[in-house]
Length: 206
Image (cartoon, rainbow, N blue to C red; front, side, top):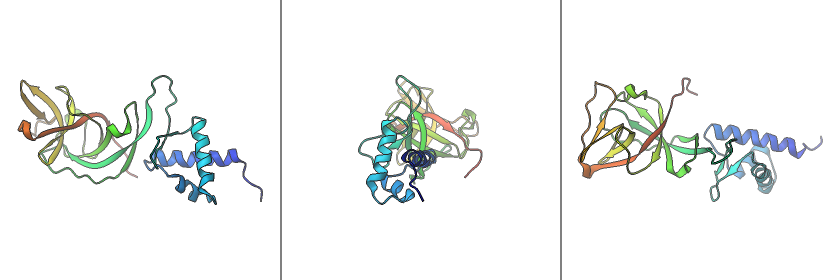
């Protein structure tokens, strides 16, 4: 049985990595080696480096799972980045946030992956803003936001997703559902974790 041409093998590797990235499971070089039965990890590394050099993959330095899909646009590109899906955040009354990492989420963004994270929503206080139980919010880490932004905030040890309202020196966290009351926290206990920049909903669960 003849050897598979390098180009065909490389295409199979690209499809394998692409599928893993789109599922939020970036592979390591060793996992590629094991998946294709290469005797040496260097063989897998060379194929991956060629895919990076030709622009089909991108690689973040210093990360074992740093492969990502580059965006096809030109200019200051929005890149496909893998950000951690950390767990659940209440969209109701305050509750302790669950920080159980579920995996990674591929998103298009010009922001660095370290500045972003995803949270799965529970509760119904934000349904008026189109954020339903089970949705995923993509959050950009930032210590402040404008009045009217939808944010993830922590009050003491508890976290919630709400619309931020700034009234003079008072900060309020408003639901988007009339069945829920606004939260007016003690400023000393309030920490803004970030601003919601995207909402995702999957109609069919895998």
